[in-house]
Image (cartoon, rainbow, N blue to C red; front, top):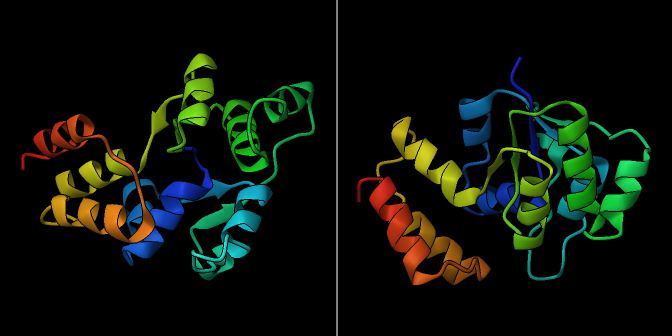
Length: 161
């Protein structure tokens, strides 16, 4: 069974695009720790509330209370810490995360990392969308999703655009 754990940002980005279901099409069920579910349903004022219970494939699962979780909480916000602790505990095939600190810690832990842009590239490869450039534009302009020019160019090249 494939185990995928998500942090807040990829779900928020796909929700903004109206495409949360792409996660299900790519991965099947996706595990979401309670802190991420809370961040999604109680966001900063500029974001829409997202209720994971509205998506049957987003399953809330808490990591064990452990020394590892405590270590991660010293470095990261609670959503990222719970996502990484759960991914490690379940030997996840990927943790979906965008924030640079979270990605750095995940990589240090040996966890496979996939961000929103990587998800969009996979969606194009799976013929779920015809192009990622307009989706990246939407995320950058509407959500303030930051992409360096070099990273955007690499993403478009990888997507064949």
